[in-house]
Image (cartoon, rainbow, N blue to C red; front, side, top):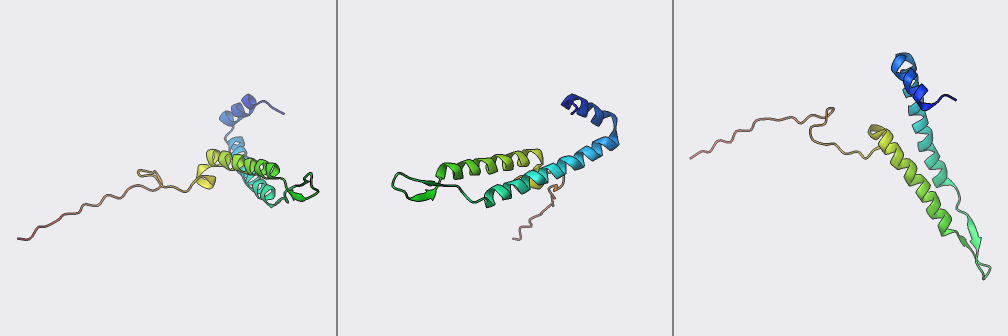
Length: 108
């Protein structure tokens, strides 16, 4: 497997490689998102306490929750348009602010 440095060098030198790399990265992000659904759908583990009562292991549930949250946070950072919070900021390149002039006429 090539080093990161080599891959980044290839990206700089070969535009076709760069385009394929970006598609592969996008597919990888989708796979991570799909993985979060698999983790969430997984049946939680059970433990038997000292009284012989079976219950859901809350530590396991928390661990699964942390795994999902971490993946979602990374996806939001790596690809904010697709996986980030859907907020629109003023002055955004894709959503420019339309300024219209409003005149107020005072009638005596």
